[in-house]
Length: 169
Image 1 (cartoon, rainbow, N blue to C red):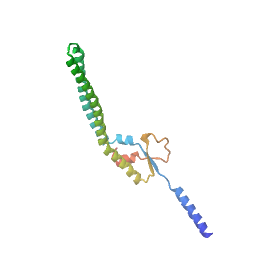
Image 2: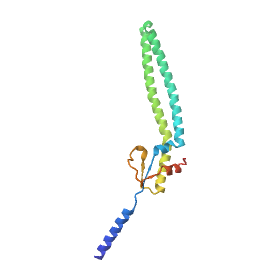
Image 3: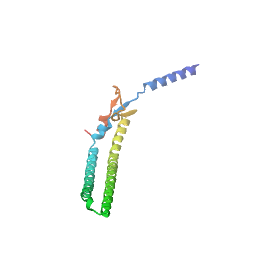
Image 4: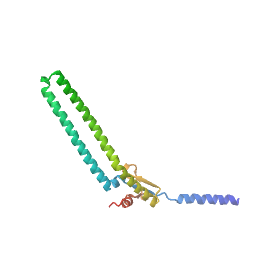
């Protein structure tokens, strides 16, 4: 009987202790945070420059195609069948190269973006992880993805803490 009482009291104390343990939940706006990081601004500048260079090259290809098409439309009636067919094949080839260039350009920009963003995203994530551990958070939610529908008084915005960790103003 005595051991049963001791066991019951121990279980009650354990249950009370577990209910007293507080789950600490924080949230961070990662998009806002990333937007303030100078590394992202630099990466965006590099990406914009790359996109501009590729756009200039694309415009040259389109202009070349348009000139050949105009020449074709203007002079096709006077050309031999061999010249006409050769020009048509050239125009089809140019169209294909323009399409290929457009796709490869987008692939280049996407690859460069991933290359430039990956270390910055890792840095931000590491800072969030550090703040979570240092401040003993059980969970940290990202409010920028729209999953946070209610923020109670006991939920803590850790964006300022992460900003400090990243030395951002």
